[in-house]
Length: 236
Ligand code: GLN
Image 1 (cartoon, helix red, strand yellow):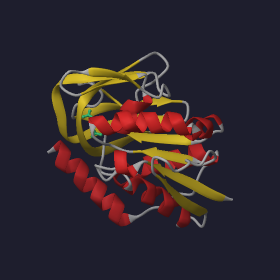
Image 2 (spheres, protein in one colour):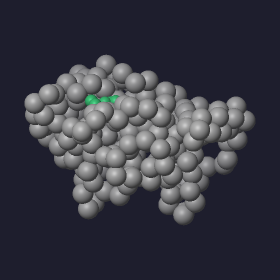
Image 3 (tube, protein in one colour):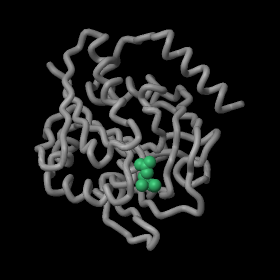
């Protein structure tokens, strides 16, 4: 079986280097001897309806409106998720998965994809800087997530979405201590970095969700060293 990773709309949601998440997933599969392919889709291309992992990245406010329109017109992201696909949505990608988000100085409200029970409104100050959070995995273990946040929108979770992690440093969803959202096999989160390069445990969690089984560990000393450096730099 070939695992398909669909990288969606880089021309709209590719501003913050989040395409690196796709490379991390591909490499972590291939280094374990698994077949994996990357499908890069732009508006107008047909998104694969049967990918195992879909990726949305960060982008500017106006691009979010175009992305929602194109994703609704295509429809295959919805089909792929109904069929059991996993979605990682970062920053602008996270915001558009919600029920609504605001754009511009006048805070125009736009309808989102409705995949996550979250909504986003412009916050009092832009959240810019390193972020460190503590993520509790489904088995109860915890792992630190590091990244770089840069967003003006503040996100509120409804009852169907659970926070991904607790904030140790940074703003996160809205400055009130939580970061990201999880709902079924959809994970929304603010950190760039790319987040999966900085946090391989999150990459493997997504792959295990997508494949439905555990993966062998894949220790990489250079990644571990970088992580330790990042964490101590943020903690000061
Ligand atoms: N435009 C959104 C905001 O500022 C998302 C920014 C981003 O993707 N980094 O909230």
